[in-house]
Length: 458
Image (cartoon, rainbow, N blue to C red; front, side, top):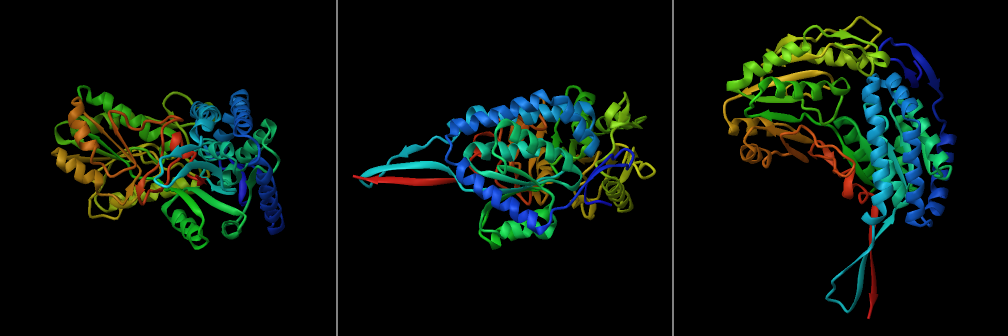
């Protein structure tokens, strides 16, 4: 099987393949990125922002085309693909409009006679290593702020997202990013290690698994390169009480099954108070019953999308089977389709033992895992009993009660009565083994900036 390809996950059909880069081609891409950086950084921030603004406009103009590409590549529905294109467009436009103001130089008081100014300068060529679950959104939140800042981008996308990566490069160049300022890489893991080691590359951003983060982080550390790591999560959604239990359960289900359950900050652990637990679980089971596998390009009512690949669906199936073997109960769904398609029916899983291996594993698929608790303190203890710390949420009719729990969540993003607040202006990132650094919002543009002191003595 070709490494870089477009493969329809509903059928397993390989639609298009792409040649992997040679070492000589990688060197040419590095040289081009470095050469363009020397020119790009000298252009005014307003000029760079205007180019990025045009990128957003082209994204909007090509909205339907872009949605169809990722739906075919990784299996999300057309409706969700359109949502992603729109969100990516918003992020790109946000940095085009607000980016220059976010990196304005400012003077700080000094006890030494003179003028002390903090500048925000680009640092050079950056490498992005991005996953398949949100092919445009993940790139937008990394590339847009850094292009406004004056850095240039090398982007290694997932093997199955070659087409979308090439289209992003095409749009960048169409908008006015100099050729070489954004380049799609079709590289091997060894070539990525070489790129990180290259002195022309000044930083690396990865969104991916803990394993990938440990490898990339170690490589970046060895060569003293700045890195940002977003490594997913097993986010808790704590439900303390509800006026309408079924409605909250549907909110939980809709978010947990969004994008085939393949979302880093999905509500992967549903922690529910005992007095509403049975009603909550029954509502989830009703939502899971009767669903049928569908075509992501033409999804019908009551149908679900495939996962990104057959291997991904088999992994989720194996994880659920393992959990059941360790004592969990599968109440609905959890059916793996016959190959080569990648359908896995959305599932409801309960009673996962806390001393099992499954309790510590992230299931990257449409599985609602529910835990029963008897007090707010028990809910908080369970929510924080996790090596990952991306996001979390607490639901209650009593906002003060929810806030008391949410304020103590060991996560990078804590929420009350909403599972995940997501917008271009809102920072995204986690703590613990979910990684470090932030993307989006006013802080996202500063991760790869040289916050240089400029001091003039009196």
